[in-house]
Image 1 (cartoon, rainbow, N blue to C red):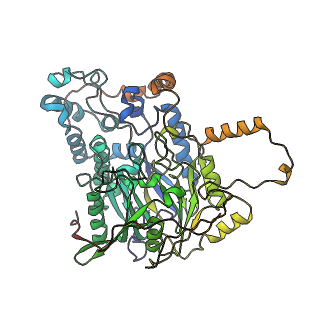
Image 2: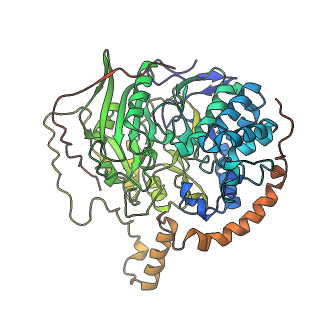
Length: 572
């Protein structure tokens, strides 16, 4: 076993490879991904409501971009595992096949007769065919022996077994804390994603000795809401997806396993009990990792409006249960939990996720390869520029089609292994200072006290009036530009380019069945040729073949529930 004795700092070695995660910034070793496939190809404009996509993607192009993302990760020494490959290997075991089929036919919408027909069909498939159907779904035309009331009432656009088009977001369905895996508990429409991951983690030899932290039959917890701020410090976004009950259950298990000393519960959906929307809420409800990303042990990437609006409740273990603090400004609570004097906030330079209706941006959803090294979508030009100005190395990956997906590189990778973080390495302040001396736009730095002071007043220090604190600084003027008259045409082109580079992922200029439908139809032909050999292997049915205790009582600190003013000093 490697790693120190600090809570959250344990990782294990499996077949000579490190397995486990104690931070977001340790050197990345292994990730789990899913390559977009037939499950997306089968989506049409009438199915767009079930997708976490801005528009229907051009599937073959999305595959190419996903392949380039994985190639960049390999170039950085990261091992890339694929869900489909692991699933095929897992289904070679009889116990895994039986469990996978049982979970697939558990949908109550099937009815008794169609359920038996589907079970017989699935049991007759070999491992490769079964893995394909479990991910890509099954249409009525493919179940040729189907009959009965439910089957006859199916529309030709319906599925006997629904595809899993959102499986690309492997971060949602599972997450790791220390050397334990949490299989997420997702909403009903995505439950099968977590079920499949549970089959893999339970039966694949690679994970034979892995202990579980969470499972799908518990209260709702999404992996995208779980961030490791450091060894023993876990932040959990609480809202429309990860519920308060799920947060309590996860906290109890983390404390019981010795994997956490402090948990930050960060509301990112509706204010609890009020029925009123929180400022930090996007259409469909955003995950915590779409609001902020850990870049270093004392640095976060997020929009300043989020940094100054978020609050957090600190949860800590007690002999008789758990202690929950009153609300604190998010950055203040984070600094205390992380054991730093202040948290540096690198401004993403983009609209926050609760911006105007229909907007979505994944600028804050980058994947850290190590300390101050991240993978980001190339379309996030402003975010990438600000990261580089703060001394962060940015590895850009194409995203013309993956960019239509509501999430960035972190959402599309489940981290299985990182090197244990070493807090003794040089701090990040020199990089920030050098960026300022070079004349680049400086990141926003929030000065946060290391401990909570009773005299905290929330007063706003004086700020020069030349520009708003929340508006990014203009780039420095080069000597060659001095005295040059403004060119209106150039200004218009520059504005247009800025909007094109990092556009809002919201209401498209055209409906999905207008602009996208033609691309989708052309793409379908290419993809069907590419996948013909897989589709042809799905044959008609023939002869068959073959946890820790929950949290204790919760005690809340006495005192006012008034939320203190979270505004802090901004360095410009």
